[in-house]
Each structure stands twice: as structure tokens, then as C-alpha cells.
Image (cartoon, rainbow, N blue to C red; front, side):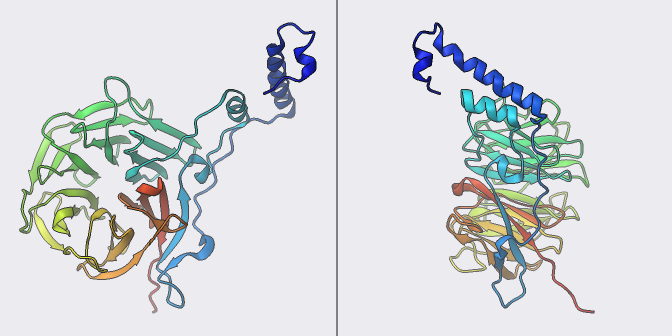
Length: 361
């Protein structure tokens, strides 16, 4: 803010003229009765721009909904005081940098593991609150990959570089080490409400490890290999409504399905560069009709498979526009069939929605 010539001539303490101006602005606010932060807009469920898959004239099954890169994209804005402070003194915008793991809970809160920002973004669309959780000197994220939440609203984070699982609650966001031993490179993480267990994929060990919410190892299963029930760099995890565990077996180019106690059920997939095959499978989620949605970071797309592993459809084109992806990684599907995809190298989330098939009587 520059001083006018008449302020710089014949007045002592010229820079102090800034302060009365700020106070005048604040006084105007008080007199005008403004200043509350905007109420967050409800999550859009309409077919914005009608970007759909498959394309017309076929019936759409996937619709693009929105892009999320900052709090503004979900209706969380600063109030007048925050904007004024930022204008006068400067501010740093909170942006998503390298998102990977995702979780959306029943209260519509979005949790994003941001590997580039070494933080967890907590976006509460109902209260209009946006928190960036990094930790302190004792417990600070190095490379957060996966994020999950238990029935007590405790948040768990896998840190591949630290070889640990951290956790924090939503009251004070204070991070504590939850699992510090027994894991080489933890990546995917998911909580099963059916048995109150936390499952973690240990990518380097070629195993999945189950822990109680008290931090005790319950069991582990798998070993390096190519046979059914074995893994070659397992990464992401998902659960269906029945509690079955889906594991992305990345370098074997397949998905394997297990019972809640780790018993092998079935698997499908192989490596290749065509639709229905996998180049670099990552995030996985299960929609309300039991279809598997799987990110492929090299295809820059999401592929959908049925219960038997038959390819159905792909969505998300390569690029940086609406509905386009660049090396997508994490994926989460909520109870309303909204699909959240970590569009990692576009530094954002892309939100889609699965449209259930209309069955004729």
C-alpha cells in the first residue's frame, strides 16, 4: 500500500497512516453488520456440464461432478476478517499438492493424504472448517499415503517413509504414533467396522497386516510371490459392505479378494496395455452395486469391473481439464456413490458419481 505525496510531506510517522485506514475498514464492517464466514455450499450432485461415460446416445453410468483443489471448491471461504488480514499482511493459500489416499465419512468430511505437502487435509463441508494436519517435532508426517477412520472418529494415517501408522482425533488434531514397529513400507489402510480391525498393506514385505484399535497385531497374511494369496508389491485396499477385503496387487497386475480373516477368496486381472488389463493399478473402491472401480496411473483412467472381474467401462480421460486425470492414485466411493479420485499430478481431487442401472419391471 503506497502513501500519497501529502502523507509523506509535513507529517511525522507517515507509515502509521496505514493503521487508521485498517481500523476504518474494520469499523465499517462492524457498523455494517458483516463478517461471518460463508456457509459451505452443499455438495453438488447435479450433472455439471454433462460430462458422462459412456458418451451419448448410450445411457450414462458415470457423471463428472466437480474438481477440488482448495477449500473454495467446496464452498469453504474466508470471512471478511480473514480476507482483510490476508490483504494487508499477506497469506498463504492452502492447496492440495500431491494427493494419494482418500477417505470420506458419513458426515461428508473429506480426508486427503497429501504426500507432497506432508500433511492430511481435513475438509468439513458441513461446518465450513478446513484443517491442515502436519504434526509436531515429535510426530511429523514424512510421506503420508493412506488414511482411514474408525467408528470412534479416530483418523489413522500410513506413512511409507517413516514405516509407521499415526493417528489423531478430530478434537485437537494432535498426532501420535500408533504402530511404530513391524512394518517396512505401509501404504494402503482401511478400517473394518464388522470386526473393529485396521488392515494395512506392507508393500515391501508383500503382506497385509491386521491390527486392533488398541495397536496389537491380530494377524497377517500373504507373502512375496505370484500364486493366489501371494503379493508382488501390494498397495491399496478397499472393503465392500460385507467386510471382504480387496487388495491391489500392483506388480502382479491384479486384484485379490480376501475374507475379513485373511482367507483367499478369488482374484482377477493381468498386466497389459489394453482396456480390461492393468499397467499400474492403484486406488480401488466398491460401488453400491458391487462393481470395482480401479485407478490405473499409467492409463490415466479409472476402470470398472464386475464381481467376476469382467471389464465394464473406463472413465477419466488423460489431461488436466474437467474429468481428465494425470497419474491418478487413491480412490474412495462413499455411500451415495460419489467417487473421489486423487488426481495426483494435477494436484487435485476429481469427483464423479456412479449412476445405478435403472431396471425395468
